[in-house]
Image 1 (cartoon, rainbow, N blue to C red):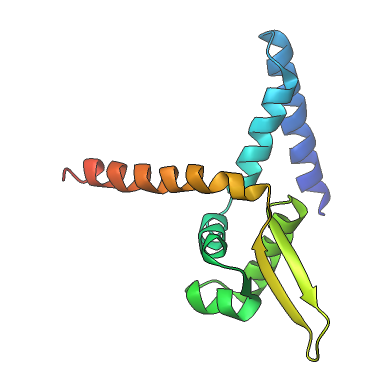
Image 2: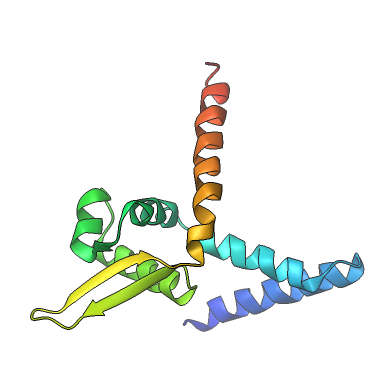
Length: 131
């Protein structure tokens, strides 16, 4: 991980801790907010999650249904989501090796929330366009 990213994360942590302390807030709540922001950061994560909520998929399947994502970006996002405990990676002992990605059991709890976010975005988009 590049040093500047580590500094940014450390700085965000310190800011959340200072803000929490100055307002008598729970630091744990601030850290939860930071974790939530990291989860939804990036333009591809919600698209990947939406696809994996449908069914477990192989890397090539995800590439085919998500237009314009590069293999490198898909790989990076899947690794980050796996490290966050949102996506599970299953390796099947076959030749050739079969790797499948899916939503972790704890992340399944997010499904109704994500559906609500999509519904809100559709309503908001119509309102913003004056429809």
